[in-house]
Image (tube, rainbow, N blue to C red; front, top):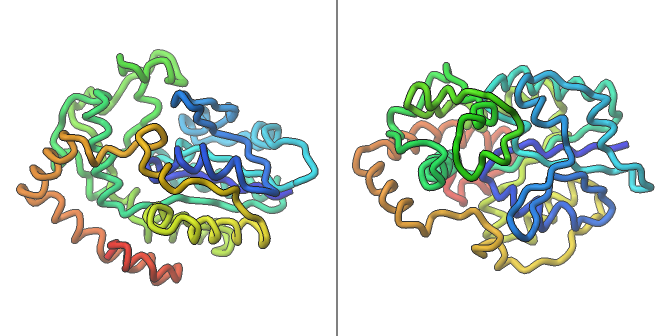
Length: 298
């Protein structure tokens, strides 16, 4: 049995992958997460949210999720698996799966951390998940804070309330009135070093969201070659990547442009760019992903 586990990051074309790519790869049993045409989530990975809450892993619960079929090559996807909250414990727990599953491979979709952090920031404000807050005040370069989402999502009284997996929770970010953004969590080289202590490098694959948008066929070929030589994904319309019906893209919103100009003027985005340059370059050199330089990572 081969288990391919896609664990994050959030806001790296995960919805597109879950809706259009993962379910359509021949030779692979896809076990969710799903997004239907109405944009509603359909989860059949009950263990994920408990794992996000405690970082404790029930291997039997995961194995039960794996479908019985002749393929013997399963893919699970949920971006909640990898969160800043108890990240080290979570990665260690995932590593313990190697004692129960013969072939475990980790998939991580990535995006330039500056764009990812800013997209997360705009998402928080434009959806009303958090009251407007200062990006500068939210940035934790020391990595001492850990936003507990989705645990803190219980106190959010908006359209996402019905999707919250817990009851009676308390949002620590709202208590402090400042969102916490853990910068080391988004450092790709830091993450890669953590993974290398747990998994062999040939068992970890990075899906580049910018590559998926620029040259989707090439990025999907990379993914399929990692999963198994000869596997091919079903054809799809690349325009879906820019479709309002199939994307969480917010860069065309007025609020996005307004916040971007504000954070360029006050120097916050410039500081972020300088901070991530070294980490992005080191990550590219360590993994042999020279293409990241051409995609603006450094």
